[in-house]
Length: 177
Image (cartoon, rainbow, N blue to C red; front, side, top):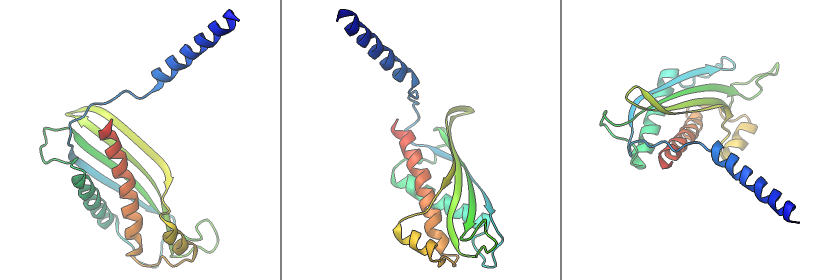
């Protein structure tokens, strides 16, 4: 009985030690971040007849939405002596019927990836990568996608804002560490 208890305690300590060693170390950043760069790479799965946002227009929308959200959370500063923030976004615009002989011009959720980099001068403090994600939005958006009715340039606004919110939440989480 004594040997069994000793083994249980030893295994428990081993598990606790392994779990403790595998956690991400806490990264201390300044309370606010200075935006160094937000970049966007836009690709499309097909070439639609409908004119959607250009890469430049979409990048501006991302910059505006992310800046507004992070300001609301009091995470941004204009002081370039604080830690810097760079965000690199890949946005693949997708359409209903992709991968079939009958693709449409109706939008569906984009496939996205992004990298968030926080630096102190030239030293990278943290770098977070998220790739292969697909944003589909709320139930109303899912219904619009399923019914092939996302056919306006303005329909993409909700997709962009949703993706920007995901990125902003990850930045907020980094700052809470």
